[in-house]
Length: 94
Length: 264
View 1 (cartoon, helix red, strand yellow):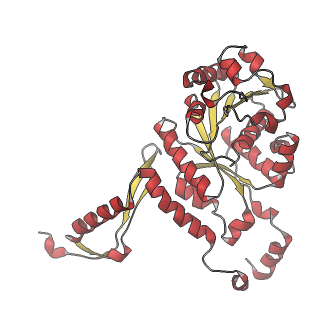
View 2 (cartoon, helix red, strand yellow):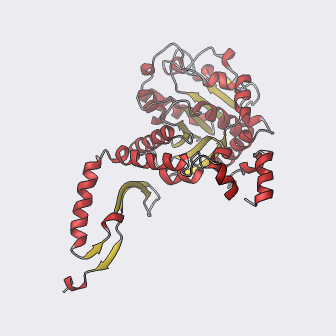
View 3 (cartoon, chains in turn green, purple):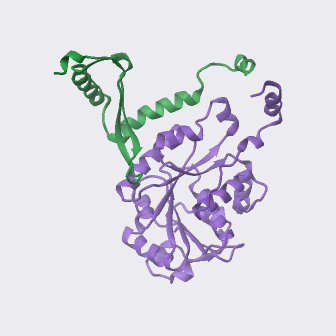
């Protein structure tokens, strides 16, 4: 396998590029929501969550996607946020 | 009471018509009474793919405008007695048929047939709306390209809005060699992005070009990989559980030798 890699032109294969570009374009297509809107949502969520825990803002990922509703398997749009937690601010909880 | 299935894609040129012809023929081969309906008014093509272009007398517009009886508009297939084609009109425009007329037509057809397959035009305008109005189920055809998958996603949303839930996906023209190299999106990538159920995968196959040249759907070709793929799709439509084809057996000698030498 390594031998084959030497002969291939570059390391990032074009399908990964296609998939990432497609995912980005679909965010807007699906919800008719601008990247600016997502940024605003992201900063608001960061502000609220930060009151309770320290989060890794670099690793914060938020996207609009589609998922299947558990009750009947119907596809529904979903807001998926991946917020890595550094630590919980325990003293804030009374 | 038969089932009405629309075959659609958004993007043009991904293989809707070929898919319709092959599923229609395949279902008839398995003993079902099938009608394939070309809803692409002005750009008629299902007739040539089926090899029935010389038998057309009346068309879809004649039928809905009642210039002829429904039975007169239906063209019997060359090979299978239980397979019929209702061709699109070639000289009229897309607005020649109204959604109410299409709805009435599909109601009439489902009384007579086990399956009514509608070949939708590309796009999302009136012709597309007409094609989906009477459908119970939808099959989305896509190819492993950004543009086709994007349009498929859009169409899934539009179908959902019209109450056509859980459309099934056919991935057409996949090239196992390119997928292997990481230069083409694979099945999982597309399922992951579109979040719908997979009905089947059809490989890019020269046999399709050849069979279309002859006007004989490839599903009738026992030896063709794509024909086998369409047969499996038909069996899945009938409720059978059929595993996906393993395209690896088709790979070239070189990669097979590499596999032996390097274990992967």
